[in-house]
Length: 470
Image (cartoon, rainbow, N blue to C red):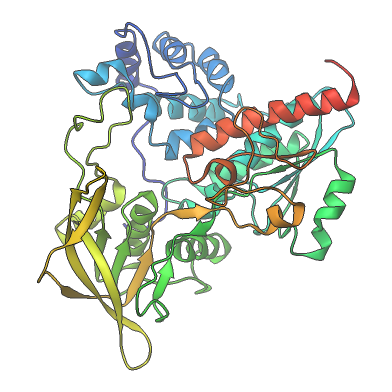
């Protein structure tokens, strides 16, 4: 657990995957590929599973790429809502769709099938995309294929957004997976500009982008973290999760962590507040640093082992899961690090202004008069636990507003950029929005789906403006 290589289930072609693809054929009416219950991009899952079973891998690849630009991303980090809506999952384990998807694209790269395919002609239209996460990259990929000239602007020093700096290397390799895809897109004609803080750096003013381009797509993600406003928040040693994850990946790529430009958990008592995927990534990262202990606090109750009455198939099963970080913590420290129904009251500091503990209290949940669940504190359950590194992984509130405000783009009451789903056009002529900055914090697979759909709307807009048809 002191290495940073990918941790993932075996997904190479073989008997196991053949059996899994065969199981898919037992389904009567599939729900896995439907946007509202399964796969947001509408992957043709039964079709590529059948092709895998028949050992027709190249055709399976073609079918997969019809709907998903980056299956090597989704095959690694997607929670697989398709499997949650698998018909077989009603009575037994669902088909391992995610593993099959990943095996198709990984084999495609190994076989040399994934090569740059630049468009045969250019339309003369120019599009600027702000943000290089999954939504921005999917938008760029689709528009470039159409023949438009696309430039992607990224404020970080590497392209990839969430996939580069938000997801740690043990979930998705940055060089062999993310950068490999970026290189293909660059060879196909997409231009990438890094260290471009659009709307802040005068070199990348929005006025200039509006003047130089026929359309702009905002795909800046939802990067504004949810804070924890309790006494002691200002103490050193209390950080947002992304401060840890971003700096760790950058240092890993720059110097294999030799430069020391990251938040180290080595020898520290780490407490992660928040129980989602980001919290799990903080656990895995801290263990690789060599933390002396790890605790994960969650305000909500522990999920049930099986579907609750209000969580019927084909909805996503909200059940108790054990991810890689939890497994690693149990292996190193002898138990699962998670503690449920816990409220943080304050951070306790030492004489030097550094955090040394957390005062917490147990809570329970019950419905109020309106039927909504509310938590109440358990009297006398206060406790102080030791902590010299606290990581806040409580999700994201929405996008940063700088670009939207300077463009005059309207925002909703959650600060998301207003753009109707299906159209993706904002109130500003020629400006579109896609991904988490439009829909709020969501899944990579939704970002890819929105990027694809937004690209279609941008193309439609440019064609209408130009008065031409293709």
